[in-house]
Each structure stands twice: as structure tokens, then as C-alpha cells.
Picture 1 (cartoon, rainbow, N blue to C red):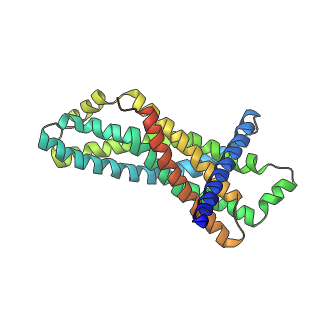
Picture 2 (cartoon, rainbow, N blue to C red):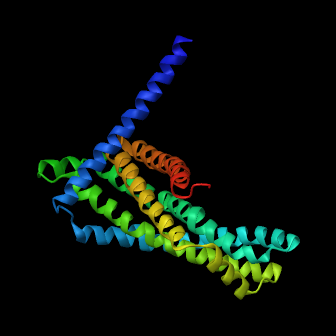
Picture 3 (cartoon, helix red, strand yellow):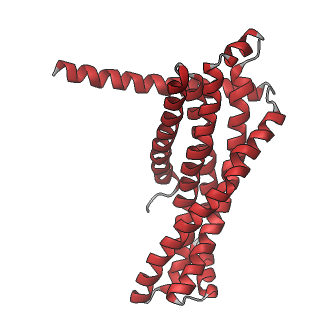
Length: 259
């Protein structure tokens, strides 16, 4: 029994220590931003690599999700004679939940793993130690550009995911249940509000911060050798995904309360 509580205590201490490390890293990044120590050329490069190069897979993933939601909703709506709510249901699902969350998960799997692997390789090959010897802050040079890039690109990717997911839903609703595009569009206008989209974009920004911080922290704490890089990459994706799901639930409770 004592060993069990010791195990729980160690895990809880490790979790709190990890949260503290994330907070310290975030504080250092915010400090660099306020001091104007942001290398925008590096940030733009990371926007291209982390954001633009992730666009295609984000569109494919979220379009498929919108099509599946529409396929299920359309047939149920036809059975109960409520086809006028299908468009709004798909749009709300994509704007509030699936658009931001799926985009973040895809970016965590593609971009987050790349960040952890790149920084981890630099740690293993002692390039980060070389930066410190040259009085160059690893946080300023490596973390801040990636954090800024994901904060900028995540809401843009989320907007694309909302748009294409809804368009895919409209196509399937018409093809599978003969719901006219006009009815689908009118349902969107009637049931959705601008706040649904803006709050979804806010989620995207928060998820971008989480993915960047977790991936960079795992890269900076990489162990020795190729196994250390692989472990850091895997752990960054797992931790970021778990954090995204938990944060999405908490933000949904806060931004979209059930009256």
C-alpha cells in the first residue's frame, strides 16, 4: 500500500514539475517577445514549414470529418423531417469543436514531432551547447520563432478546416440526402453566429501555444543518442494530443456554456 502511494506521489510530482517547466518556458518566450527579441526571418520560415506545409493534410482530414458528420446527420434529419438544421449542425460542429481540435491534432502529429526531432537532434549533437557558448539564447533562437509561427498559423489552418469541412458536409448532404445547397446554407446562417467562429479561432491559438511549448520542451530535454530523439518525438505527440483534448473540453465549458 505504501509503495502504491509513493508511486502516485512520484507521478503527481513529475506532472507538476512538467507543468512548471512549461510555464517557465512560456515566461521566457513572453519575456523575449516583450523585449523585441524575436527573429522574424526565422519565424516566417517556421510559418512556411509548420503551417503552409501542413495545409493539405489538415484540409483532407477536416473535409473527411465534415462529410462523415453530414452523412450521419442528413439521414437522421430526413427521417424526422428536420433537414433545415443539417447545415447549421455541421457548421457548428466544425467551428466549435472538430475544426480546431482536429487541426491541432494533425499539427501536433506532423509539426510537433518535427520540432521535437529537430531540437532533440541539436541537443544530442551539442549544437545547443554551442549556442550557449556563443551567448545565444536557445529559447530566443529556437523556441520563440516556432511559438510565434504556430500562434499565427494555427487559427489560419483552423479557418481552412472550418471552411472545407462545411463544404464537404454540404456536398454529402446534397449527394446522399438530396438536401439543396440553399437549404444547407440558410441553415448555417440561421444557427451559427460570428462568436462560434471567433471562439474556434481562439481555441486554435491556444492549441498552437500548447503544441509549440510541449514539442520544444521535449526537444530541449532530449536524452542521449538516437533513442533519446525518438523518445522525445513520440512523447511530444502523446503529451500534446492529451493536452489538446483536455484543453478543448475545458474551453468548451467556458466558451459555449449550456444554458
